[in-house]
Length: 100
Image (tube, rainbow, N blue to C red):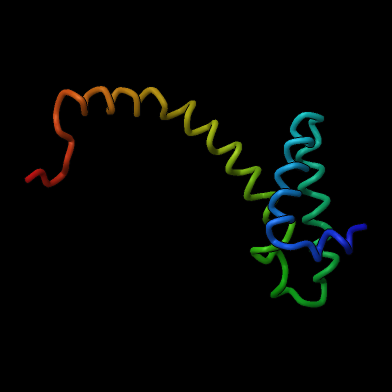
């Protein structure tokens, strides 16, 4: 089955990664899933280090979606109030760097 996963079309691979990651978040197995695919990538490319974690691999796609998901909520939590304050202030005054 793992071999078939490596020859998916890019669009299918993106959808697969998003779906797998969503399901693994719900079950609490997201890190196990990512680790599995990273290890599989290392095993598959053990003789060709230059191919490790290539941009289009399932391991890197899973990492990308994971980090975007985690990073987005982190940024909203840490910077959300500040950005809200800035946008409220911007309505009152122009915040352009070089207004004309």
